[in-house]
Length: 125
Image 1 (cartoon, rainbow, N blue to C red):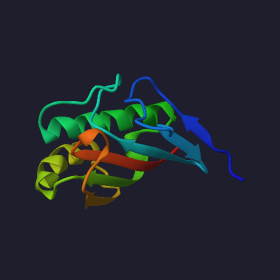
Image 2: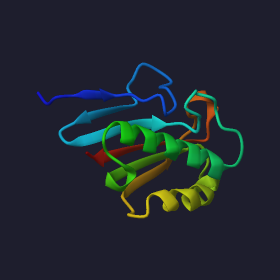
Image 3: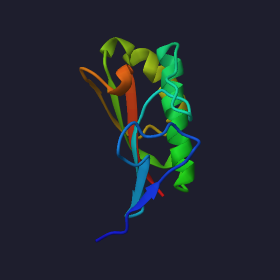
Image 4: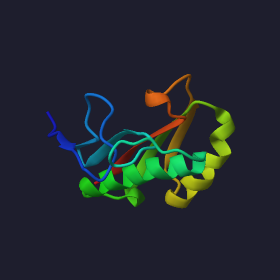
């Protein structure tokens, strides 16, 4: 069985449930879905762009704690509650993921805490 290491940092939003911010395994970092919230867990008010930025900053902090970084992300999954926000989300997203990792984006009925977006990813260590 592969070694699994939980990753936790106070520099990103705390988990909204019984799970890790990320898991390191087999030379990869599996980052749990990040909500648009501060490191204290306060939900971000404002535009979709501001909310996207907050979720990505959480990802950056978690990857740093895992001894990785955003340039090593190979796969991103984006969950949104309305495809109408797709364009505004992408404007911020592409500034952070210039290397264009593989990605899925799906519309879902609802997300935790009533937020409009959630972003998770897999990165290399």
